[in-house]
Length: 355
Image (cartoon, rainbow, N blue to C red; front, side):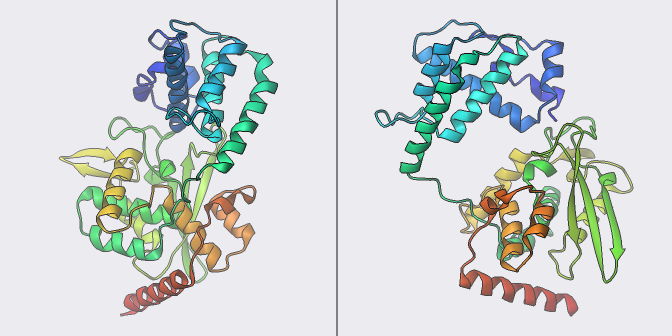
């Protein structure tokens, strides 16, 4: 769920055409029904359309758009054989742009041109063929155990920000979580339980031979409004234990029901935001010869490790909250060397814990 403080930055969505306008109270209420990441995507989509309108002599303009406007935008923005211009985008991005433009119409009570569906579908199909013949982006790399050890060694006694982000990274890896599900929209301000992971959202219990923890998260990418999803974590006897990471955050809260992944600076609570987390992690990976690892790599890494160690598909889907074979998109291929290296490090970590 988005926050009121951030809505003012959605300048493109606010206007009902090419001219900027301020958001009304009703607009803000409408936008709060979407996750912040979704809104930034939609706002970028409208910016893309406004850029198209300026480039093709369509400004000024007001909603609703015509059928021809939509067709011309699809041709201008989508990849074609004739024009490899820099403003061309992939099929996936173009589809997101069209979704954002439809929401833009809905917010401003403007009818979206309904006669565009058939032709737009063919445009998208054509873009898909061209995308297939274009050089695809390299697959997202996975965070592996050796990367977590490297991060832990560097940050376990680091700054307050580094220690909090380290614990977040460990939980994201073992919980197969997206960074956006554990970070916050604003680095400061009042606590909003509907948009924050709180200390009270953590439950730790002993079951049988080990310990388990559940982290309740709101506003997950695949969640319905108001739906609470859960990360399920298992304790392990090594320094990368996710339950130890949670306990460090709980201890740092000092009996206060506050945001879970935060730190204190001059007595002020600072929430970890996704941009801040990604910047710090990217800088760390690049400076340590691990370029190519992204924020999404923790979810990829956690899923890939479980897959390569023989976790059943049903359990993997349950842990990652996948309802279909889409989990396969997150699997990184471990080489024989990667498997041997990971097993060796895990054994060493377990041996160190026993000493």
